[in-house]
Length: 435
Image (cartoon, rainbow, N blue to C red):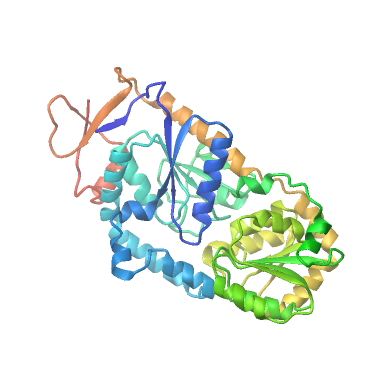
């Protein structure tokens, strides 16, 4: 099967962006990166690859359970049932270790069919299987993990030890974590922040006061925007009740039932309740501050629009988001409280120091989504320089098996690939043959 030799110069580089729909942020990051690559005119063919569709192409899980692999997780987020996710994460990772040989075999088959020139993972937990299967089947194809969280949750969440790959990190904490696990500096790439959609950078000219009046909001009074991810949260009910005298824009995402409940709640101040909204950036520009969970996406979007933040950080905060609240405190871009029951005090404190927080937010300059394509371009160029010249049309053929077909030469795999085989990734150690 075809694999990686020096490519035909007329061939378009194929970049696979690996995502899944758990929580929504991974897919949103993949779409944002795809849009930035397209806007920059990169000569690449970008493919969005849903990892769970690769692992379950016939949809057997959905057929058996009536839901997708991510649906239960997303429903729990919407209901706020997140208190035990830390323990469940370790159980899930134990399951992945047991399933590792099978995962590697499935992914090997996919890589041989798909033949990407670059693989970019925007998902946690699966990077060991993704990397090792790629190293086995397409030696020389670079593998990049773009962390869509502000920090890793070791072990085995985002950053794996001993994998000769690249990491793209949006905070100094994540950079330090990658280096602490032994990854070389030239393979750990820092960006100025987290990925957010390019439209959050677009200049929008409109009369802010007039738009507020159109929505029934008083232009002379502060407005808070409340957002708890793409599926909302029951915490928004408590916030709406306790801030009955504060103007709010409440964004419920796909949770229409929650939106209906919030519309029915009494309030003394004007408020706007939205379901799923494509133009969140516009509504953020109408607000003065943000209230939500410390998710890296919505947090970064709010800060990009100049909004100081109020985030809730407690036992219900997901493990991968706990550092984010610490980051908010360190950067002095907002306030962290342990409970929504003190949200009135948090709002009063933030509004009392609003100019200070706005000044701190203004110092941020997150251009990550525009920086990453340039990082990927350098990685692609480096891989091209390192590929051996095999002549012909710049491609080679590869076979993984026990015996060499006629005309094929056995080659020794890279150490990391051999390690993957030794764990049974291909049903035992299987040589690689090329011609």
